[in-house]
Each structure stands twice: as structure tokens, then as C-alpha cells.
Length: 273
Ligand code: GLN
Figure 1 (spheres, rainbow, N blue to C red):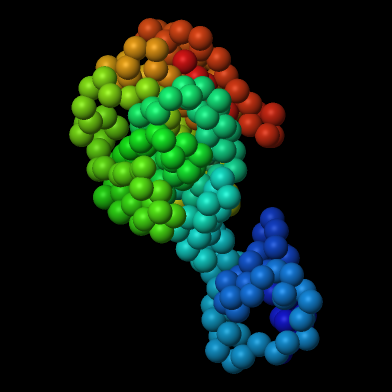
Figure 2 (figure 1 turned 90 degrees about the vertical axis):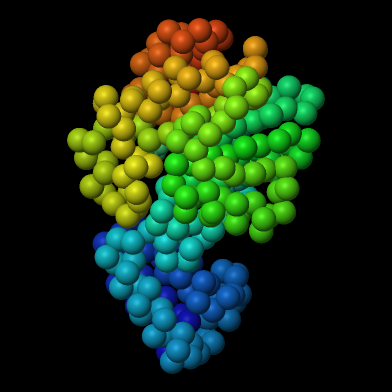
């Protein structure tokens, strides 16, 4: 079977999903090691029996709903290729606003940054790549996430980042950081959003929080002042309907200049203080 015929059949097989053609192209690129433009230019190339078997298995898993990032083991964030696994949240484009807002507020001089619940290391590594003069610490409660983030850091040669196992602040020294960023779990356990798409295959511990999704945000906001240098910043990602609550939580914990920023979809996404 040639590439053109395979793509047509695979797109049809994935028609129940959101992006059947794109998914088929990504999986084909993954198995053949060829770029999208190569696959389009040489679409009369025959696929080997081995490639077809491999592709068949991947298409079946995708049709069952498994995230593309889990099938390829990779996802790009802030133009950095990151290894992902089922142990962590898959980095989302929405979270790039957290990186942007952090960069906009960092002092021009070398600073010390902390990423809480780093997962793949996405946010920490994006910041480390933009500010080689800054030292970035990423923490996660899950050992496998810490190892994954460190793997990503090593692969990208971002030696100004390092990763530590810690339950939020438990393994950290006080008053060390100029900035703390986090994309914590913030979804309510009852939210219907958890029943659709990629989230079904991601760890609930990275997604769901008690207290209508605000429990971890409250815990972080309560402890953060102890770990920030005077004048330091806290930036938190949250759900689009949580902005007013998060602003109130930050104000209750001594934060000033509290404001919310929108993501590219126009939704309230990050609150800073
Ligand atoms: N924004 C993600 C989603 O809605 C959730 C991220 C999180 O809980 N930290 O799928």
C-alpha cells in the first residue's frame, strides 16, 4: 500500500476523533521518520509490511482515544520537543501563557525560579531555555515525573534547570525564590470535561483537586510567601471560571498587584501576584 492510500484509509478509520487527518499524518511521520512535507511530496512511496503492522496497532489505539502524545511519546511545548509519559499531564498550548507572563515579570538580573508540579518539566524548561542566566528548580511529588523532567532537561542540555522530588514545598528551603510558577491540578472531580478526549488517559492526580478544584491552589498560595524573596512573584494557572476565586485567595495571602491574564482562546487562565 502506498502513502496516499494509507492516509485515506487511516483518516477514515479515525473519523470519530477531532483531527483524523492530522493524527494519521503524525503517526505516519512517527513510524516512517519522514517529515510531513516529505510524505506529501512522495505520497506514491510504498509502505513496508512492518510499517503497516506498526501503523495498524497505533491507529487502533488512537481510535480507542489514546492521546497522540502517548503514542509517539513526544509533545512540543514552547518549541521544545519533550518526552511525555502516562505518568504526567501532556503539556498544553494554553500553558504557554504562564511562561510568557513569567518572562515578562522576571527581573533583568539572574533570578531563582521554582516550578511546582513540573510533570514533563515543560514550564521549567521553557523558562530555563529563555533565561540561561536564571536557575530553575522543578519539583513533582511523583518520582517518575521527576525522572522524566530531568531526562528532558538533559536531552535539551538545559543545565540551568534541575528537578527534585517534593510534595509542593516539602523538600525546599525557605526564602530562596524570586518567582514561583505552577500549573497545579484545578479541575473539579465532577467536571464532565474529564470524560472526554486526552484527559481520560492522564493521571487524575495532575488534573483534579478538592474544594471545587481550588484545594491545591489554596495550599500553594498559603505557603508561597514563605518561599519567595520579598517582592517575588507567584503565577498560577487555573480554570477559566476560577479567576475571581484565585485573585481572592492570593489577596488573602499577602499578595499585591494581583491580576489575571487570558490565554489565546480569550479565557482567564493565569493569575499573578
Ligand atoms: N487545562 C487542562 C485541561 O483542561 C487541565 C490542566 C490542569 O488541571 N492543571 O485539560
